[in-house]
Amino acid sequence: MSTDPRLYLDAEFSAGAHLPLEKDQAHYLLTVMRRKAGDRVRLFNGRNGEWQAEIAEAGRRNAVLAIGEQTRSQVEVPDLALYFAPVKKARTDFIVEKATELGARSITPVMTARTIADRVKRERMEAIAREAAEQTERLDLPQIAEPVALTALINSWDSARTLIYCDEGGDEAEKPWGGEAGRAMPMAEALATASEGPAAILIGPEGGFSPEERALLRSQAFVLPVTLGPRILRADTAVVAAMTVWQALKGDWR
Image (tube, rainbow, N blue to C red; front, side):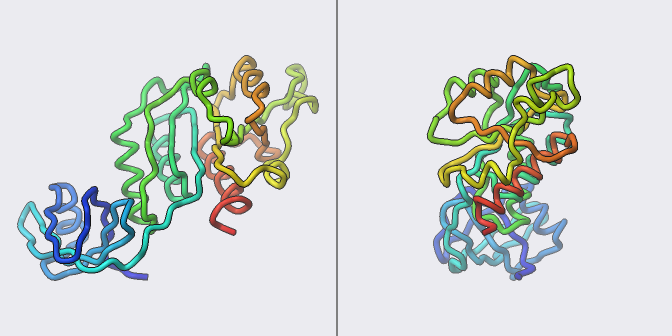
């Protein structure tokens, strides 16, 4: 695998064209990665695959790239969306980074009754996703959406997309783990009979969904309740676990 630095540029590529880098990207390439004029760089824009380029100009605070030839054709990740209730800053950053690495096509924060973070910074999430895509050979970036309330999300849902709802509870509140009634099926077992179409994963807050939210989700025909095993997982761990299982059984790990 190439050791040449890899950058996302929101620009059109054509052989022989010269593209100036933004200040932050020039700093990363010249100062952090210690590259100089004549060194090679790999580029992608999420639309036209990956291209080879060369540093044509390297100043103290600026750089210009000369575009060479296309080296990889565009390939899309499977149509898997992630919806998650924001948690503390560092853990939300982790979720966005790992969801990008694991191939989420879109990432959307969902506000629930027990969500502990009342705001998220979309620009920060976009920057984290871009860096993760650059480092993991993705040819696109996940779409980062504005936060949405759970009720609004359900009311506007496209029923052609299966919503995989990670439900760790049961229907008997007085019993450990909610008893046996209403318990969700293990995720791998549930996916064995699920459709091959577009899907989404919903991860709740660390306090869990409220009884009302759980009832709302369970009442929807497009919702597939699943469990992630016999242990309670933190929200960020649950994202990685659920996406891993889906990619292995329904995604591009097969």
